[in-house]
Length: 388
Image (cartoon, rainbow, N blue to C red; front, side):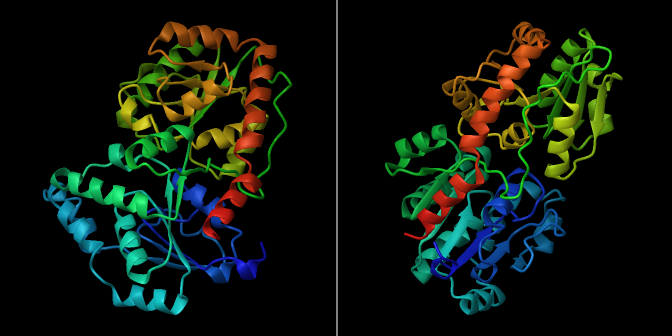
């Protein structure tokens, strides 16, 4: 579709469109090559203002007063204020929106700015398109307001002209709740991201297999699970590299994560991470939580996109019910452990010592990533839906 035919998008969300963490990076990749003059981004937070889409008008809305309250003894009592903020009209924002003249509104179901997007869609009588990376109903809790907000969430989902669910499990779940279908929009690679060849050469030094984990350490039981993996690979003369925010005091309780065979790194640009993994790493690690199983049923771990771009096999560990694990199993991928059982994990790690096993899994994962996380396929689906 020619640029002049594309709708003018007002992006309104608490998820920043910046190259930083999972959801923000996905929105950056999705919108990076959209016509700059047809995009206005109003975001409630910022994570990496140096990595924004050049040439696009950004407006960041933050309440210094509410941010201060979050750090005081009143932090548990401000839900009502946070909700009320979405109903307060800002002359500055309304003026910017009026001048921009949007054709559609795009929002992400995270925190509360979707409420403002929902209201504006009805007020301006223009289509609302909704991106769902996590299940808002199970991942967020606003206390006494939760039931009311859940009702509004359902109204917004039905009202939306486009509903982009991150995996099949999520789409089925919302269809059962709201009796309307959504589109599957998987996490996507950036248009310019390199997809490295499958790691086929043996990269060992002194018979060392190198594992890599990139992501949160303190979501659910992730640190406990990584500690267990670190324990297993230490007995096999393995090595683990972790890219994450490290809280040294909090990490001291995890004996094996403090061992010399575990190397911690600062977070780096996704392109640098993929290159490092392709050149230095043998196996990626992807975790979904057993302790917070309900929260993971309908999401999809976007880090898998980077692992497949790096050409690696992936050790996936978590409950069978999770969105990404049910996807992997349905796709015929066998590098998965679905039991909270260190023996089963040790068995998989033992298999991963075999060069041919790793090569086969890497090819399998690479093929899945090329097909389902492709920029071209997912971007076309997005454009087709918002242009109806």
